[in-house]
Length: 165
Image (cartoon, rainbow, N blue to C red):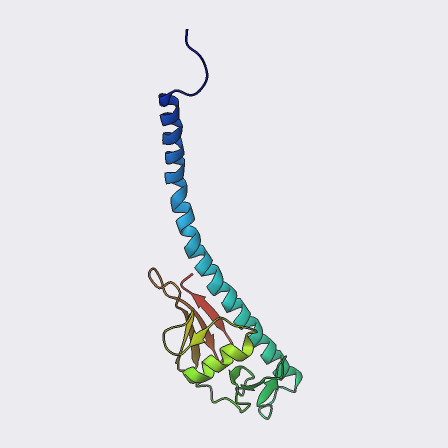
């Protein structure tokens, strides 16, 4: 007479195979979560920069919106130099010439964002700042194996574009 006190080896093998199949189908989904997290990070930074740029522009409008209004003081006391159209360009408190340098773009990043992630004009940080013409380009450096993720701010018209997400 056979006693029913446990599982047979075949039942255990079947359960292990089923668990293996479930794990194999779920694993690719968890791998994709990393890319989604990187995309979300870049989108959030783009939104933060867009909000800060619009707040400085609103401060310029509230102060009279004239060519003589060359800077805006933001929360925390930082002075942001603006272009003749009121878009932030530098932290020197002087009117912008609509051609920011990479250093001016980096200073804007640090002044406009409260506690921003690490950023530099050279490699070695989470973000890297470059410039082209009137654009400040902030490139996400954490994962560049699949796609280049950037936030581009145009000092001519205040547009902020998130790309690569």
